[in-house]
Every structure is written in C-alpha cells, then in structure tokens.
Length: 93
Image 1 (cartoon, rainbow, N blue to C red):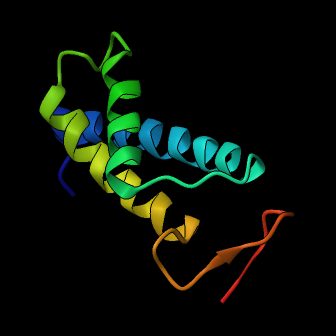
Image 2: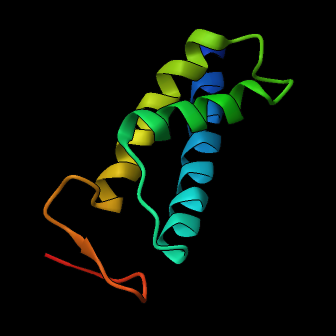
C-alpha cells in the first residue's frame, strides 16, 4: 500500500475543514430560515479556507475543495432541489 502524498493529505485536511464549516453555515441558515445559492456557498467556504494561515498558500487547492464541500453541503440543504425546509430544520420531499 502506498503512502498518501503530501498533496493528498493536505487536500483531505482542507476538505474536512471546508465541509465542517459548510455544515455549520448550513445549520445557521436553516435556523434563520435563510437560503443561499451554490455559488455563494462555494465563495463563502473558499473565503473561510483562504483566511486560515496554514491553507492560504494553497489557493487552487482551497478552491477545488471548497467546490466539493459546497456541493455536498448544498445537496443536503435542498436549495433548488426537491426538498423544502420546515421551520424546525427538518425537511420533507
């Protein structure tokens, strides 16, 4: 079994941070009954990542991982999809 490269380890760390931040943001939006577009979510996650000194040297990696994380979070958020959020944060199809 090959050892993961530094790039892959860094990408995974950035993705985990992006995903965690995205889910926290999703929870805040649901609590405030707000909506967000996929592009705005990507942009917000990217700006969060690039503000972290350990990741600011990797803007392209931050952009790529922000896009992946935003897509994952957005799919659970339901914006533009078949889900409608109720006031308690639960959703139905």
